[in-house]
Length: 446
Ligand code: S3P
Image (tube, rainbow, N blue to C red; front, side):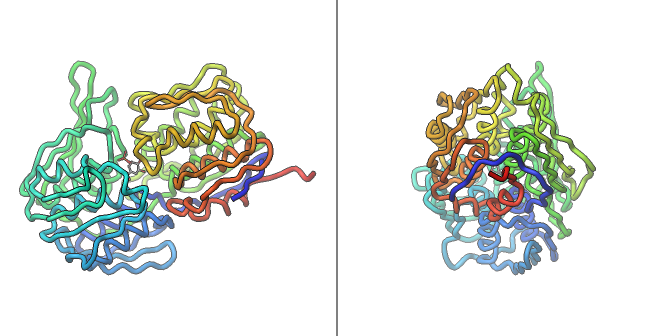
């Protein structure tokens, strides 16, 4: 894919449904009692992988454009799949389904593509084994073989990493346990869940007995969530908000290209996901939040972004580190592009988790920025970028959708043409990304 620089981005976009929420809508409605209509379901390949795995286990799924009808089978009603379940590129599919399958009394196997086959799975295998399921991995990575058990043993579990996938896998297994399962976040300086809380919000929307609590000791907060196995999920229609992580590409493009003005409608603004917007506004960005409302327990709003000279002119480096990292993790590749356009640059630390995403995102960002002549330094847990004049180059997506899209935004701000190798991987989360970019970009007639 070749991309030319652009003067500005202008227009209005209805982004496809949030990927994290769509996965949960599909899985939770499959486990519920009754029929669910899901609207604005994500068009991503990742969420299609989830639907296909559910179909393999006897769930009737009908898809009509962005609307999906799911016929729930109840929390322990899945059927043994006749073959291993293909999770494609999707870590969320694999980790959440592992939690579900641990509590189904049959044998199953989950596998994924080359990238997913390298990602750590021991973090979910350990608690699920403690709950009584038999879990085998290939030295900690996929495929995962599961011999489920019903009921599982309810446990108290302290998360070693602030991971929503891990937390959700345990809560899903907890639905099929013999009592109350409690999951604790790592202790934190903030009195909220350290990772995204879509599972908690949707469980509660569907009537599960889930409680959240935060306790304070010496200025440190401990977030805990409990799920009572007496819970049933009751089918209820779900409308998925537009994807805030996809919105980040336009937030950055509009913030750095003079004259830009972009409006994104009905975007999910869950506080555990929206931190990058607050952080950028603190640095002088012009991101307006309009028409705030709640939809199926999730906060949503329209986002209006203008170019901001103040953001670009900021001389102090922006530093992202510590607890905010878990809330901005998926947006960091494109935030790095913003950093290259800011006078004071940007530094990201405590983000070692980026190395075990769809690619090693620290090394992918640093490598591609170097190819575009950026000032950049790599650390084990992050990177530092300085104000740079980006030049068009051949960059590699490393098969990672967020790297491909981040560097498409870099290309808009660069001098000359940029080629993104293996750009088709955007389909994993945002199949019409390049069409939308084409529609929003403007170029001075030469
Ligand atoms: C996700 C959680 C995050 C995120 C991923 C989606 C989810 O991963 O990076 O894109 O839907 O729960 P971790 O739980 O591994 O941090």
